[in-house]
Figure (cartoon, rainbow, N blue to C red):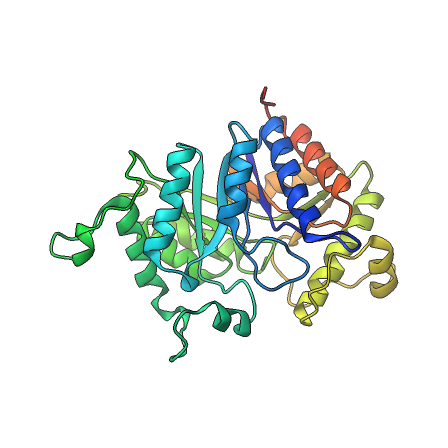
Length: 339
């Protein structure tokens, strides 16, 4: 089983966004040493609790600080951007770090409607994600040098023009994304930590409807659950309260930094209820001792027929986050790298 990391660069209460970005770099270096497969940076806009609106910038620093782990976007929110510019940016990263760059693409806004409007260059008309499939096809054509001969863009060269290409993944948390990834023959990453309800249906649809493409000859998917490991189940549950309160606040439009467990327990109560609308086969967050969490994750991966899990961990204490990834790596017997 391969393990990877998806990092939202959480800003803990009492710290700064600069601290959060420094924590991301430190965690990436640890993940590289521990033997994690890849390290992805999320994209979020105008939110105090999450520090990285530009994953490609943080990716450059993290790739420079690490030696072997793949580095990627989790993901670039393509509706905001020109496919040509995204292709140029990731071809630049590919030229700097060949064989190590992943381009994870999503269609979610990564913020509120106002954030989306502020990101638009042309505001004369209301844009939507309806043209996302066309954007994605254009991006793939730029990356693969695959425009028809009569297309005007066939005359463009995406520089740096180097052999190979970033590895492209479609991100999602719905049946729509599963269907799109299958139809286009793309690698698929399902954000279980965002919505656990459609996980099984989405993965089953992806595998059963996959169409081989120039990018990929056979289906390849991974699932991204939330995970918190600690030395005791009680400590893991205590740490989880911060993520639970953060999630509830986000649903209410409250984007404050990640609260302490003490603040979370005071607000949620000692035995918080199951979050609303969470009725999937597995919880969004797995919390407990590393052995117990490992067994649950292996069970989920076996049912879903995936051989890679991308782990997100939101806690207040950065040292506890580092410790969680370390305990999980040990439980899965990852092979450490010498760096």
